[in-house]
Length: 251
Image (cartoon, rainbow, N blue to C red):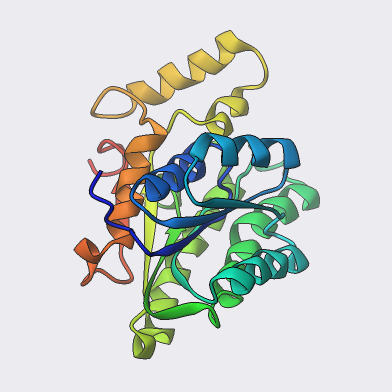
C-alpha cells in the first residue's frame, strides 16, 4: 500500500457494510485515521474489527440530527478536524407508483437527502479548508427504473446538492463530488430481492446482464473510485459525478 492517506482523518457514514465498509477499510489500509457510523451496534463492532488499523465506530442513524452531532463530537474530542468526509449512509426499497406510501417517502428522503444534508452541514466546522467531500449517488438518478422512483429521485437530489455546495464552499477550497455506482454486490442490493437466495442470485444475474462489462461490481472497486475522488490526485475535480457503473448508464 502507498499510505496515500497517512495522517488524514476520514469519516465514512454507513460504514458497516458494502461500499462504506470497503471504503473505510481502503482508507485505513492507506494510513488514515477512520471514523465510521452505523445504526446497528453488533454490525458496527464487527466492522471495526474487520477494518483494523486506527478506526473508531460510532453508533448513529444519520437521518437523526442528534446522532450526527454525537458522531462529530467524537471526532472533535480526539482530532478536531476532518480531512475527508464520505457521506455514504442511505438506502431504499422498491414500490411502484400507485403503492407509494408516506412512510416509504419519509424513510428514503430522510436517509438519502435530509440525512446527507445535515451530515455535510454539521461537518463544516470540522472540515479543514481544502478538504474533500464525497457523496454517494447512483446511476438511477439519470435512468428510469420500475418501482424505484422515490429512491431515484433522492439520488437525483444528491447530484444537484454537490453542484450547489461546490459554489457555497469555493472560498474554502472544499471539493464536493459524487460517486455514482451501478449495481454492486452489496447486502443492500441483494436484499431488494427478499430473503430467498435463489431470488437474490437471480437479481444479481439480471443486473449483470444490463452492464456492458457483463458483471456487477465488487464493493472494493467502488472504494478505489471513492479514494480517487478524495485524494490529491483529484485536486482539480469539483462538483463532478464519477460513474463507476461498468458502462451501464453511459451507452
